[in-house]
Length: 84
Image 1 (spheres, rainbow, N blue to C red):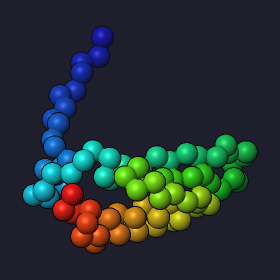
Image 2 (image 1 turned 90 degrees about the vertical axis):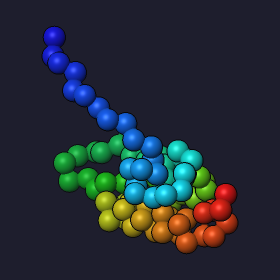
Image 3 (image 1 turned 135 degrees about the horizontal axis):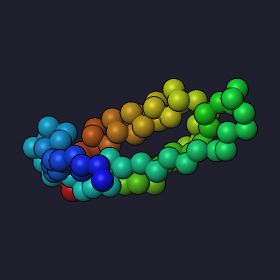
C-alpha cells in the first residue's frame, strides 16, 4: 500500500491572497473537450463560467485561456459582484 500524501486545505480567499470571502463557484469553470480524432487534431470544446453562465466554444488552448482570464477579469471589475 502506498503512503497517502498530506494535503493542506485552505479557504479560496486565503489561497488567492484576497481578504474577502468568495463563493466556491465564483472562479469555477466547466470545460468540455470535443473528441480527439487523431494526433494532429486541435484542442476544441466548450467552456463555461459557473457563476455567470457565460460560455463559449474554443478551438485552441489560447482561446480557452483567453476566455477564462477575460471572464475572471470582468468578474473582478464588476462592482456588484464584489459586494455580493
